[in-house]
Amino acid sequence: MTDLRITQLDSGLTVATERVPGTLSVATGVWVGVGSRDEPDEVSGVSHFLEHLLFKGTATRTAQDLSRGVDRRGGDFNAFTSKEYTAYYCRLPARHASFGIELLGDVLTRPALRDADVHAERQVILEELAMDDDSPDDVAHRAFAAELFPGHALGRDPAGDRAHVQAITPDNVREFFERHYRANTMVVAAAGPMEHDELLALIQEHFSGVAPGGSVPERAQPGPVGGGLAIDDDSEQVHIVMGGRALPRTDPRREALDVVNHVLGGGLSSRLFEEIRERRGLAYAVYSGVSAYADAGVFQLYAGTQPEHADEVQGLLLHELTRLATDGITDEELDIAVGYLTGAFELGLEDTGARMGRTAGQLITTGKVRPIDEQVARWAAVDQDAVRGVITDVLTFDPVVVTVGPTE
Image 1 (cartoon, rainbow, N blue to C red):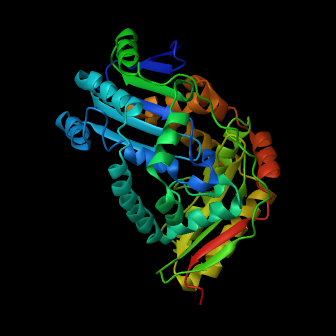
Image 2: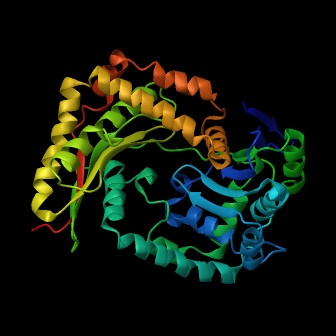
């Protein structure tokens, strides 16, 4: 059994602590409710830029102090930027938990954000973008998002693009931090064997400097989808991404869509894997996936195949999507999918980092944490009627198709 407690401090900061007896680590994370969709167009990529800069040091610690301090204690310290939030986390042996909380508090409330660091880290981010551009599957997924949400911030890559990264100034970064990194838009979560009162006292102490106030920016709804794209690239494979809009994060049909996704391309027993990889040998990587945002969602299929098989594989992806819409799924497929979703979910929660991330992610996006038993029950309750309904409502679109690879 675990024990999750949620406290809102006088500053407005939300703190969640989960005692997980028997574990040896404490995972602490700070989720900030601003991401790439919340950036003004002229500084797109600034959330990711800021995420990088918070590792460059604070008023009292250098970048080397941060990295060496974590390494000396055998821990992990990292961050990522998504379209609707930015996350920073540290996992350490429980005996060093106070150091991790102190470190995150320092980084999130007193970053240096020096001009010289902005100019130096700009080159690192440009190298990151170049690395992604050398991965045609990444290019395909980025292009697909841009076609699915044309002219909208959800279609942008969180890392930004070269032109905007080149143009972002130190003042842009500092202004973004001061506007958005505030108590009302932050969640601090910790999971491990320590008592609640001890964790809460440490967080109160080391996050006392967080600026009060703050709110999530108003978000524009996405407009119509685009028409697809074929990008010529001198690669060994053609990378195919197809799909359409799906359900927002809080839609009650999400669990039924999870089941349908698993049947189509979510695991080793899925239709895409068995038909395209196992039976025909036409791809190594082939799958489907679901993403969800505050007001929209994505359902997509992916396969990478040699150019001479590209038309056949694209036809098979479309055939399986169409067959799903016309025939639904079998009772056995439903049973397998529910078993996988519930079991994998429970196994994943054996890790303190996963528990902390789930708690922080749900609090920053929905304002509450769904109990584990309730989430398992929601998947277990999916029946054929729910499956047929979500297929009819969500998966009868004309798919947007993006390909990257040799066009001849």
